[in-house]
Length: 344
Image 1 (cartoon, rainbow, N blue to C red):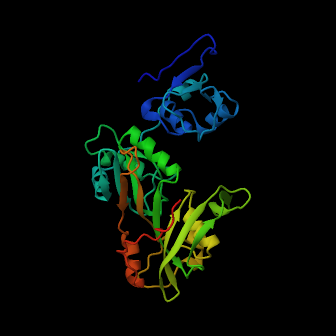
Image 2 (cartoon, helix red, strand yellow):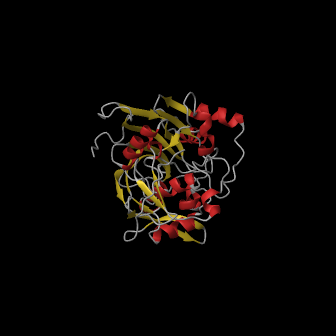
Image 3 (tube, helix red, strand yellow):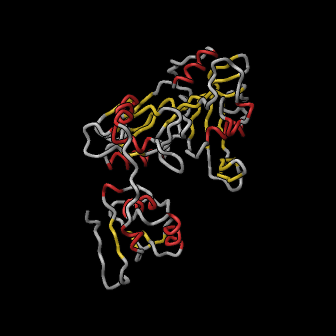
């Protein structure tokens, strides 16, 4: 592929200026480098960014910077290993797993696929994570020339609606919508006890911290990043447990789990990471895993520039949460809008 390499007398010998293609718009700068220079380690890239050797349109940038189609990326001379090495490819998933992924599809058109991600499936790979949604996307290609693209995330332990873009344009528009306020993403969660008040707005900044038990997200009013969640108690059972509707306006890591446990003082049932022992209730048949589910998404369809055509998708509960709903007598078919009165 021709990446639009240009060079003139004002460019240092060996330095390249690479142009971002249309199909690469809106991806992170570090992911762009991983795609084109897979042998370049993240630590080395960070050093090149800190020292200004890598620039975007002549300006310094961070690894998280999202590139635009047509912008110019300055790439300094790289060691042969960084410039040419290719990552070790993992074996493709078994065909049975790729076929099974199609059973998760809730909605599909030419631009978007909506799936019901099962709990326990990571969205992307990492240290010790060999099975993940990103590795199964070829099973969701259907009749498209390319595999669908991830545009947002769900925690590994959280199930529910996830959207995949089938084209670069759809990916750009969906990503922009998720960064803005045009997406209404409602979660259902089971929490210990009954929050008071029964509805409200949580505004508690969050930050990741490394401790004895590994990395965790915690509230930090001074150094944390903005994190806002609306919640509403939908049903309760003997004041022992509540079904909550949760609408996160921001998408911080583990935001809902931390806001429930730390701010409301009512951890998600089965969430030992943030709720400790009190998160596990003594009820026959109740699974010892987090009970949090991305129940629905409503947002402008990426194929309608006017924003009037809405994409609306709802995902049924996973088996362990359906069982919990039976145990406590909750309504698994509730179609009400818990935040209908909120207009942002």
